[in-house]
Image (tube, rainbow, N blue to C red):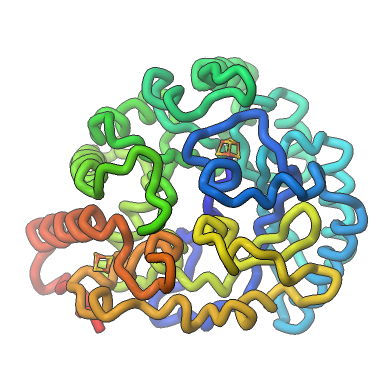
Length: 397
Ligand code: SF4
Ligand code: SF4
């Protein structure tokens, strides 16, 4: 699935070391089509129709233009590493031959910069050949999986037939795991879009039972004027997140890694949060579409209007041009309610697109109630479980 970029926050520096964000990460839409048709998908089903007029696959011309821009960005900022995250639609539709060429062109053009390649897939095309390809090219991948078939198949269906896809994906995973450890060695983690109709604790246990020990819970994308599918308010998400948190927090040594929970807890303990879903600075990355258009974040396209209009591209503009064009610093400024909120440290207003009211982003997230309750509970367990001398809540601004 096209997820928000899965920035590797476990590697982010401590609060004292945080530098102004330099763009060192690209989400690249290598295939603009998908074999699935998920009802919450921000590419196909949230109002933006730009995918219809873009090339199905990225061309060699765009790949070469982009490679030059990455090299330029690295030289200008003295970067020695750069992350290239391949997305779609479904990136595996590009095929191995074209993907090999893309990786080779970018790495050769940018040498000696180390270009780390990762990819987010719905997994339905995964096979042994793809795993070997990833291993040969040092490509890590993330998998999109929303839970058990009876839950996830309400949303993640085959394009055309509308048939459920989850059991098929689980069968593919079982078959690849039966061949050896490569699947789990290359799997970076799982992204799960939350459907709160399941008990949060049940969902966490299901992932662990399936052998997935590193995943994230994504809140479905929407704005105040383009609400998520089936929206009845933040209440169900509040309940779900609290249930999932209790299962995770009391899971002992067998607890999985859940990025949302880890990063909010670490923020409460003093580390600055850089995850975009938790108000992280979006200047550190950009999205490049299959026709070479550059934007801040593809999820922002659900805000429509100027945020779904292409004005910049890799042939004429540097990769960090969107930050100036969209005045991202001003756009990201938290609203007064968030700045005064006792949970701003861990939440930071949530994900930027979720703050949009049709005119501005100066609002709390549509998920405010859920994020507030989650952070409140985290604060309570830290206060109860840590010696008072070792921890005090990090004050908000
Ligand atoms: S797998 Fe689903 S969410 Fe991902 S790109 Fe395809 S339709 Fe969208
Ligand atoms: S919990 Fe609500 S008010 Fe507080 S920072 Fe998050 S979105 Fe803003």
